Image (cartoon, rainbow, N blue to C red):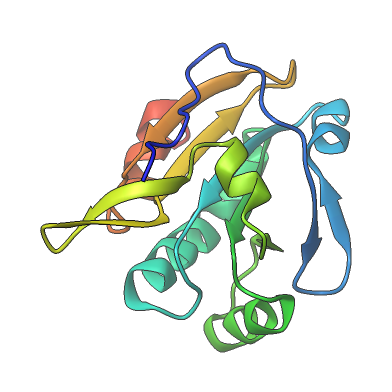
Length: 160
């Protein structure tokens, strides 16, 4: 299994248009044109304990992040119907996007080899990116932990 190509600070963020859990679409570069910085995070699977914790943490922080000029996009390979159930079950207010073919995951280096319980497997690499209004990567974090990650990200971004 080849290692995923990783993005670094200053790289252009790969553009994408993905379906939302509510039947709409989101395009990254359109958000950037509106003058918003975008937090794009990839998670393995909706409705699993770690992914639920992370999504709830982003939801709990959404008002502060939006006030600081950020939009939050959570991307998984789950279907839009599963994402809709995830939103409803956990009262999520962040935007959830479906990438079932993993095209965007791969463009961001968020799919590839990872260690799981000591074994090397291929799968989704829990990752977070901050994209500036110029379309460039401001932060690229791979193999982040579900618990505590959002609080650390807020500190790193200076969002109280």
